[in-house]
Figure 1: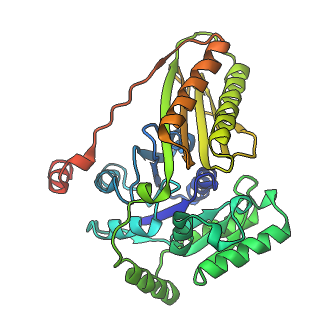
Figure 2: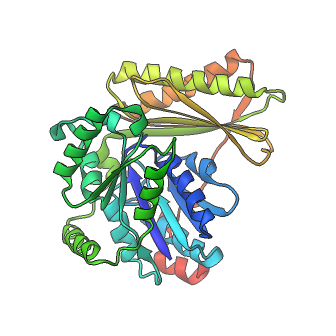
Length: 367
Protein backbone atom coordinates (compact mmCIF):
# COMPACT_ATOMS: atom_id res chain seq x y z
CA UNK A 1 0.00 0.00 0.00
CA UNK A 2 1.31 3.42 -0.97
CA UNK A 3 1.27 6.30 1.51
CA UNK A 4 1.27 9.84 0.07
CA UNK A 5 1.97 12.80 2.36
CA UNK A 6 0.85 16.04 0.69
CA UNK A 7 1.72 19.07 2.79
CA UNK A 8 1.68 22.79 2.26
CA UNK A 9 1.01 25.96 4.20
CA UNK A 10 -2.54 27.08 4.93
CA UNK A 11 -4.30 28.00 1.68
CA UNK A 12 -1.77 26.47 -0.72
CA UNK A 13 -4.47 24.46 -2.49
CA UNK A 14 -4.02 21.03 -0.89
CA UNK A 15 -7.71 20.13 -0.87
CA UNK A 16 -8.34 21.07 -4.50
CA UNK A 17 -5.21 19.20 -5.58
CA UNK A 18 -6.19 16.09 -3.62
CA UNK A 19 -9.70 16.11 -5.07
CA UNK A 20 -8.21 16.05 -8.57
CA UNK A 21 -5.68 13.39 -7.51
CA UNK A 22 -8.46 11.13 -6.24
CA UNK A 23 -10.18 11.38 -9.64
CA UNK A 24 -6.85 10.59 -11.35
CA UNK A 25 -6.23 7.51 -9.20
CA UNK A 26 -9.83 6.34 -9.47
CA UNK A 27 -9.69 6.45 -13.27
CA UNK A 28 -6.71 4.08 -13.01
CA UNK A 29 -8.55 1.61 -10.80
CA UNK A 30 -6.93 2.69 -7.54
CA UNK A 31 -8.80 2.20 -4.28
CA UNK A 32 -8.06 5.36 -2.31
CA UNK A 33 -8.44 6.48 1.29
CA UNK A 34 -7.74 9.94 2.67
CA UNK A 35 -6.78 11.10 6.15
CA UNK A 36 -7.54 14.81 6.61
CA UNK A 37 -6.04 16.58 9.61
CA UNK A 38 -7.57 19.86 10.79
CA UNK A 39 -6.02 22.00 13.50
CA UNK A 40 -9.49 23.06 14.71
CA UNK A 41 -12.18 21.04 16.47
CA UNK A 42 -14.40 20.85 13.37
CA UNK A 43 -13.38 19.25 10.08
CA UNK A 44 -14.26 20.84 6.73
CA UNK A 45 -11.96 19.39 4.08
CA UNK A 46 -13.10 15.81 4.68
CA UNK A 47 -16.58 16.62 3.43
CA UNK A 48 -15.14 18.51 0.47
CA UNK A 49 -13.02 15.57 -0.65
CA UNK A 50 -15.36 12.70 0.21
CA UNK A 51 -17.37 11.04 -2.52
CA UNK A 52 -18.06 7.82 -4.31
CA UNK A 53 -15.11 5.42 -4.44
CA UNK A 54 -13.04 7.06 -1.70
CA UNK A 55 -12.96 6.54 2.06
CA UNK A 56 -12.25 9.63 4.17
CA UNK A 57 -11.26 10.03 7.83
CA UNK A 58 -10.85 13.28 9.74
CA UNK A 59 -8.49 13.85 12.66
CA UNK A 60 -9.18 17.18 14.36
CA UNK A 61 -8.10 19.38 17.26
CA UNK A 62 -4.36 19.34 16.70
CA UNK A 63 -1.59 18.17 14.42
CA UNK A 64 -0.80 14.56 13.53
CA UNK A 65 2.93 15.25 13.36
CA UNK A 66 3.07 15.81 17.11
CA UNK A 67 0.05 16.00 19.46
CA UNK A 68 -2.19 13.53 17.58
CA UNK A 69 0.32 10.81 16.77
CA UNK A 70 -1.71 8.05 18.48
CA UNK A 71 -4.91 9.07 16.72
CA UNK A 72 -2.96 8.85 13.47
CA UNK A 73 -1.84 5.29 14.14
CA UNK A 74 -5.35 4.19 15.11
CA UNK A 75 -6.78 5.71 11.92
CA UNK A 76 -4.15 4.14 9.67
CA UNK A 77 -4.60 0.67 11.13
CA UNK A 78 -8.39 0.95 11.03
CA UNK A 79 -8.40 1.99 7.36
CA UNK A 80 -6.13 -0.89 6.41
CA UNK A 81 -8.32 -3.35 8.31
CA UNK A 82 -11.74 -2.16 7.14
CA UNK A 83 -11.08 -0.70 3.68
CA UNK A 84 -7.78 -2.14 2.32
CA UNK A 85 -6.89 0.82 0.08
CA UNK A 86 -4.21 0.75 -2.61
CA UNK A 87 -3.25 4.29 -1.66
CA UNK A 88 -3.66 6.36 1.50
CA UNK A 89 -3.35 10.12 1.02
CA UNK A 90 -2.52 12.13 4.12
CA UNK A 91 -3.46 15.81 4.12
CA UNK A 92 -1.87 17.31 7.25
CA UNK A 93 -2.58 20.72 8.69
CA UNK A 94 -0.92 23.67 7.01
CA UNK A 95 1.56 24.02 9.89
CA UNK A 96 2.64 20.36 10.08
CA UNK A 97 6.13 18.97 9.52
CA UNK A 98 5.66 16.30 6.81
CA UNK A 99 9.00 14.60 7.47
CA UNK A 100 8.02 14.16 11.12
CA UNK A 101 4.74 12.52 10.04
CA UNK A 102 6.64 10.06 7.85
CA UNK A 103 9.11 9.29 10.65
CA UNK A 104 6.23 8.64 13.07
CA UNK A 105 4.56 6.23 10.64
CA UNK A 106 7.83 4.41 10.03
CA UNK A 107 8.18 3.88 13.79
CA UNK A 108 4.67 2.35 14.08
CA UNK A 109 5.78 -0.97 12.64
CA UNK A 110 2.86 -1.20 10.24
CA UNK A 111 3.71 -3.73 7.49
CA UNK A 112 3.21 -3.28 3.74
CA UNK A 113 3.43 0.53 3.64
CA UNK A 114 5.63 2.13 0.98
CA UNK A 115 6.08 5.88 0.81
CA UNK A 116 5.85 8.04 -2.27
CA UNK A 117 7.95 11.25 -2.27
CA UNK A 118 6.97 13.82 0.36
CA UNK A 119 5.12 16.63 -1.40
CA UNK A 120 4.85 20.24 -0.34
CA UNK A 121 2.55 22.64 -2.18
CA UNK A 122 3.37 26.33 -2.48
CA UNK A 123 1.17 29.30 -3.37
CA UNK A 124 3.71 31.62 -5.07
CA UNK A 125 1.56 34.72 -4.68
CA UNK A 126 1.95 34.44 -0.88
CA UNK A 127 5.63 33.56 -0.76
CA UNK A 128 8.14 36.30 -0.06
CA UNK A 129 11.17 36.25 -2.40
CA UNK A 130 13.40 36.80 0.63
CA UNK A 131 14.08 33.56 2.52
CA UNK A 132 14.72 35.56 5.70
CA UNK A 133 11.07 36.70 5.70
CA UNK A 134 9.69 33.15 5.83
CA UNK A 135 8.34 31.80 9.08
CA UNK A 136 10.33 28.87 10.43
CA UNK A 137 7.64 26.26 9.87
CA UNK A 138 7.13 27.38 6.24
CA UNK A 139 10.87 27.05 5.64
CA UNK A 140 10.88 23.63 7.34
CA UNK A 141 8.02 22.39 5.15
CA UNK A 142 9.92 23.41 2.02
CA UNK A 143 13.11 21.77 3.27
CA UNK A 144 11.21 18.55 4.13
CA UNK A 145 9.88 18.07 0.60
CA UNK A 146 11.12 15.66 -2.02
CA UNK A 147 8.77 17.21 -4.58
CA UNK A 148 7.81 20.89 -4.46
CA UNK A 149 4.60 21.71 -6.31
CA UNK A 150 4.12 25.36 -7.24
CA UNK A 151 0.33 25.66 -7.42
CA UNK A 152 -1.96 28.47 -8.67
CA UNK A 153 0.37 29.47 -11.53
CA UNK A 154 -2.69 30.72 -13.41
CA UNK A 155 -2.75 33.65 -10.99
CA UNK A 156 0.87 34.82 -11.48
CA UNK A 157 3.22 35.90 -14.25
CA UNK A 158 6.45 34.31 -15.50
CA UNK A 159 8.63 36.67 -13.47
CA UNK A 160 7.00 35.64 -10.18
CA UNK A 161 7.18 31.97 -11.18
CA UNK A 162 10.94 32.24 -11.86
CA UNK A 163 11.44 34.12 -8.61
CA UNK A 164 9.62 31.34 -6.71
CA UNK A 165 11.63 28.59 -8.42
CA UNK A 166 14.91 30.30 -7.48
CA UNK A 167 13.83 30.69 -3.85
CA UNK A 168 12.72 27.05 -3.56
CA UNK A 169 15.93 25.83 -5.19
CA UNK A 170 17.95 27.88 -2.70
CA UNK A 171 16.07 26.40 0.27
CA UNK A 172 15.93 22.84 -1.04
CA UNK A 173 18.46 22.00 -3.77
CA UNK A 174 17.51 18.28 -3.74
CA UNK A 175 13.77 18.45 -4.44
CA UNK A 176 12.07 18.10 -7.82
CA UNK A 177 10.15 21.30 -8.66
CA UNK A 178 7.05 21.27 -10.85
CA UNK A 179 4.41 23.94 -11.41
CA UNK A 180 0.71 23.67 -12.30
CA UNK A 181 -2.78 24.94 -11.57
CA UNK A 182 -4.87 22.42 -9.64
CA UNK A 183 -7.97 24.47 -10.35
CA UNK A 184 -7.47 24.49 -14.12
CA UNK A 185 -5.97 20.99 -14.46
CA UNK A 186 -4.23 20.00 -17.68
CA UNK A 187 -1.01 18.23 -18.68
CA UNK A 188 1.17 19.84 -15.99
CA UNK A 189 -1.13 18.60 -13.24
CA UNK A 190 -1.20 15.06 -14.69
CA UNK A 191 2.60 15.11 -14.89
CA UNK A 192 2.68 16.11 -11.22
CA UNK A 193 0.36 13.22 -10.32
CA UNK A 194 2.57 10.83 -12.24
CA UNK A 195 5.63 11.96 -10.27
CA UNK A 196 4.07 11.73 -6.82
CA UNK A 197 2.49 8.34 -7.50
CA UNK A 198 5.83 6.53 -7.75
CA UNK A 199 7.17 4.75 -4.67
CA UNK A 200 10.60 5.86 -3.49
CA UNK A 201 12.66 2.92 -4.78
CA UNK A 202 15.31 4.38 -7.09
CA UNK A 203 18.81 5.34 -6.02
CA UNK A 204 18.10 9.05 -5.98
CA UNK A 205 15.14 8.58 -3.67
CA UNK A 206 17.17 6.33 -1.38
CA UNK A 207 19.88 8.96 -1.17
CA UNK A 208 17.30 11.58 -0.26
CA UNK A 209 15.84 9.28 2.37
CA UNK A 210 19.25 8.78 3.93
CA UNK A 211 19.73 12.54 4.27
CA UNK A 212 16.22 12.79 5.68
CA UNK A 213 16.98 10.05 8.23
CA UNK A 214 20.01 11.99 9.35
CA UNK A 215 17.83 15.03 9.96
CA UNK A 216 15.27 12.84 11.77
CA UNK A 217 17.69 12.52 14.68
CA UNK A 218 16.69 15.99 15.84
CA UNK A 219 14.26 16.31 18.74
CA UNK A 220 10.57 16.02 17.80
CA UNK A 221 8.96 19.41 17.26
CA UNK A 222 5.51 20.63 18.28
CA UNK A 223 4.16 22.31 15.15
CA UNK A 224 1.34 24.15 16.93
CA UNK A 225 3.68 25.81 19.43
CA UNK A 226 6.28 26.72 16.81
CA UNK A 227 3.86 28.14 14.25
CA UNK A 228 2.38 31.04 16.21
CA UNK A 229 -0.96 30.21 14.55
CA UNK A 230 -4.23 30.65 16.44
CA UNK A 231 -7.07 28.37 15.39
CA UNK A 232 -10.77 28.16 16.12
CA UNK A 233 -13.64 26.30 14.50
CA UNK A 234 -17.36 26.09 15.04
CA UNK A 235 -20.36 24.23 13.64
CA UNK A 236 -23.93 25.52 13.47
CA UNK A 237 -27.09 23.67 12.49
CA UNK A 238 -29.47 25.95 10.59
CA UNK A 239 -32.98 25.22 11.81
CA UNK A 240 -34.82 27.51 9.39
CA UNK A 241 -36.71 25.35 6.89
CA UNK A 242 -36.77 27.39 3.69
CA UNK A 243 -33.31 28.48 2.57
CA UNK A 244 -32.49 29.14 -1.06
CA UNK A 245 -29.11 28.22 -2.54
CA UNK A 246 -28.65 31.91 -3.34
CA UNK A 247 -29.04 32.74 0.36
CA UNK A 248 -26.59 30.00 1.38
CA UNK A 249 -23.98 31.32 -1.06
CA UNK A 250 -24.55 34.95 -0.13
CA UNK A 251 -24.38 34.47 3.65
CA UNK A 252 -21.28 32.26 3.27
CA UNK A 253 -19.48 35.01 1.35
CA UNK A 254 -20.54 37.70 3.81
CA UNK A 255 -19.37 35.70 6.82
CA UNK A 256 -15.97 35.03 5.26
CA UNK A 257 -15.45 38.62 4.18
CA UNK A 258 -16.51 40.01 7.56
CA UNK A 259 -14.12 37.69 9.40
CA UNK A 260 -11.34 38.65 6.98
CA UNK A 261 -11.89 42.37 7.58
CA UNK A 262 -11.90 41.96 11.37
CA UNK A 263 -8.79 39.75 11.39
CA UNK A 264 -7.07 42.30 9.13
CA UNK A 265 -7.74 44.96 11.76
CA UNK A 266 -6.04 42.73 14.33
CA UNK A 267 -3.11 41.84 12.02
CA UNK A 268 -2.98 43.75 8.70
CA UNK A 269 -0.55 41.24 7.17
CA UNK A 270 -1.99 38.01 8.53
CA UNK A 271 -1.38 34.75 6.75
CA UNK A 272 -3.43 31.66 7.27
CA UNK A 273 -6.70 30.20 6.12
CA UNK A 274 -10.30 31.11 6.87
CA UNK A 275 -12.62 28.51 5.40
CA UNK A 276 -16.27 27.67 5.53
CA UNK A 277 -18.71 25.02 4.36
CA UNK A 278 -22.49 25.23 4.12
CA UNK A 279 -24.18 21.85 3.58
CA UNK A 280 -27.55 22.70 2.03
CA UNK A 281 -30.03 20.19 0.56
CA UNK A 282 -28.06 18.44 -2.22
CA UNK A 283 -25.56 21.31 -2.55
CA UNK A 284 -22.33 21.91 -0.67
CA UNK A 285 -21.07 25.50 -0.58
CA UNK A 286 -17.34 25.81 0.08
CA UNK A 287 -15.57 29.10 0.64
CA UNK A 288 -12.12 30.29 1.68
CA UNK A 289 -9.88 33.30 2.24
CA UNK A 290 -6.11 32.98 2.57
CA UNK A 291 -4.88 36.54 3.04
CA UNK A 292 -5.86 40.02 4.12
CA UNK A 293 -5.84 41.28 0.55
CA UNK A 294 -8.21 38.92 -1.24
CA UNK A 295 -11.94 38.45 -1.51
CA UNK A 296 -13.57 35.12 -0.58
CA UNK A 297 -13.55 32.33 -3.15
CA UNK A 298 -16.87 30.47 -3.26
CA UNK A 299 -17.43 27.08 -4.89
CA UNK A 300 -20.63 25.02 -5.16
CA UNK A 301 -20.30 21.23 -5.15
CA UNK A 302 -22.96 18.58 -5.60
CA UNK A 303 -23.29 16.11 -2.73
CA UNK A 304 -25.71 13.50 -1.46
CA UNK A 305 -28.83 15.07 -0.01
CA UNK A 306 -28.16 16.53 3.44
CA UNK A 307 -30.61 15.74 6.22
CA UNK A 308 -30.19 19.26 7.61
CA UNK A 309 -28.36 22.48 6.76
CA UNK A 310 -25.05 22.88 8.55
CA UNK A 311 -22.56 25.72 8.58
CA UNK A 312 -18.93 25.02 9.54
CA UNK A 313 -16.23 27.66 9.94
CA UNK A 314 -12.51 27.15 10.55
CA UNK A 315 -10.02 29.97 11.03
CA UNK A 316 -6.28 29.46 11.45
CA UNK A 317 -4.25 32.67 11.24
CA UNK A 318 -0.91 34.03 12.40
CA UNK A 319 -0.29 36.55 15.18
CA UNK A 320 -3.89 37.03 16.32
CA UNK A 321 -4.86 36.26 19.95
CA UNK A 322 -7.09 33.18 20.05
CA UNK A 323 -9.65 34.89 22.31
CA UNK A 324 -10.06 37.63 19.68
CA UNK A 325 -10.35 35.04 16.91
CA UNK A 326 -13.08 33.16 18.79
CA UNK A 327 -14.99 36.38 19.40
CA UNK A 328 -14.62 37.42 15.76
CA UNK A 329 -15.87 34.13 14.30
CA UNK A 330 -18.77 33.68 16.73
CA UNK A 331 -20.10 37.23 16.57
CA UNK A 332 -19.71 37.44 12.79
CA UNK A 333 -21.52 34.17 12.11
CA UNK A 334 -24.36 34.88 14.52
CA UNK A 335 -24.74 38.45 13.26
CA UNK A 336 -24.92 37.49 9.57
CA UNK A 337 -27.41 34.67 10.23
CA UNK A 338 -29.64 36.94 12.32
CA UNK A 339 -29.52 39.61 9.62
CA UNK A 340 -30.90 37.01 7.18
CA UNK A 341 -33.45 35.90 9.81
CA UNK A 342 -31.99 32.41 9.87
CA UNK A 343 -32.35 30.49 13.12
CA UNK A 344 -29.63 28.11 14.28
CA UNK A 345 -28.23 26.04 17.13
CA UNK A 346 -24.57 25.44 17.93
CA UNK A 347 -23.42 21.86 17.48
CA UNK A 348 -21.33 20.51 20.32
CA UNK A 349 -18.71 18.18 18.85
CA UNK A 350 -17.52 15.20 20.87
CA UNK A 351 -14.59 13.11 19.63
CA UNK A 352 -13.01 10.13 21.30
CA UNK A 353 -9.50 11.22 22.20
CA UNK A 354 -7.20 8.38 21.18
CA UNK A 355 -4.25 10.37 22.43
CA UNK A 356 -5.31 9.26 25.91
CA UNK A 357 -5.43 5.56 24.98
CA UNK A 358 -2.29 3.37 25.15
CA UNK A 359 -1.05 2.08 21.79
CA UNK A 360 -1.04 -1.49 23.12
CA UNK A 361 -4.74 -1.22 23.93
CA UNK A 362 -5.54 0.11 20.49
CA UNK A 363 -3.79 -2.77 18.79
CA UNK A 364 -5.29 -5.41 21.07
CA UNK A 365 -8.87 -4.17 20.95
CA UNK A 366 -9.14 -3.20 17.29
CA UNK A 367 -6.60 -5.15 15.34
